[in-house]
Amino acid sequence: MKFKIIRTKFLEGLKSVQNIVAGKGSVPVLQNVLLEAKNGALKMVTTDLDISIMVNLDCDVIESGETTLPVKILFNAITKVCDGEVEVDVDSRERASITAGKAKYKIAGLPASEFPKLPTDEDAFGYKVAQASFKEMLRKVSYAASQDDTRRTLKGVLVSLKDSKITMVATDGRRLAMVENELEFPKQEERDIVLPSKAVGELQRSLNGDNDLTLTVQKSQICFKLDNIIIYSKLIEDVYPNYKQVIPKEIQQNIAVDRQLLLDALERASVMTMDEAHSTKLSFDNGILTVASAASDIGEAKDEVPIKYAGEKIEIIFNPSYVMDALRAIDDDEVTINLNDGHSPAVIRCSIPFLYVLMPLRIS
Image 1: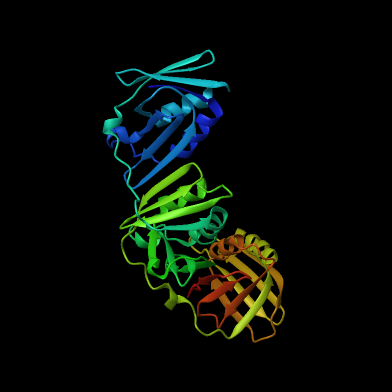
Image 2: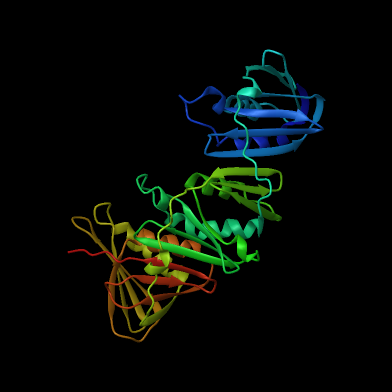
């Protein structure tokens, strides 16, 4: 195999695939990138068996062929060379000679026959979503997913395709973020899928185009096609918890507040929180929200924010980081906080179909 490719293009492709490799101690070929050159194109693939990513690049193919090379070493080498044309020449023993300007490398590879085959998505229905929209939806919910390895399902993000809508949900049991968008698809293609956290992270890195994203689902596998990148991922097959029962059905108080003012006040007050007592009290009272935090043996912080509220005083305690996460995910100037009392879940809403349910802390 022999091909020539522009260094910046090659590096961009390697950046896209280098994160998806198996850890050390696994099958050696899983730490390699599959390179296949033919018909004026270079196909690059990496996998850790749970998720695979493929990138297609234009190149000058001198001799068709395929091999696998250690992706981290290859990426580091191409990072260091000067801009211009890179020539890759692979011999029959899977040794690659790489030339870029005056720089020359020799890298030992493994046969392409040892690399796992990619899944197929033949005859599967393709849902089409704008890349920017899908990425924004992930941004609005993914932070609320569990970080606990023992709660595998909650580490993922639910993607529900029902009622001509795409709904994304993430929860760790203490908070829940949900966002919806309209999407047209046949009734018979309704389904719920749970994306693993690694697939969510890779999508957030890769979704940067203006074109549509096409996603197809087959059994326990999902495929995302975006521009010149294709991402395959296994799905979490466990049933996602019924998130709808967590959303309060009745709300007594609707409180409007400037999002940035509240975020700033929480950041100032959180200076006085500690890991063992990471809590902030919010006191809603006749046009004023008081934000207060205290840490024993250190001190206390207090700030005030104007609000649109004229009801009875409500005091409620939250993990301030959880409130700030939601406020950072919202773009509106003003948000609405729904409350019943100081012991029931609160709901944060904005102008788009987004909501954030947050359980209060109970501190004796």
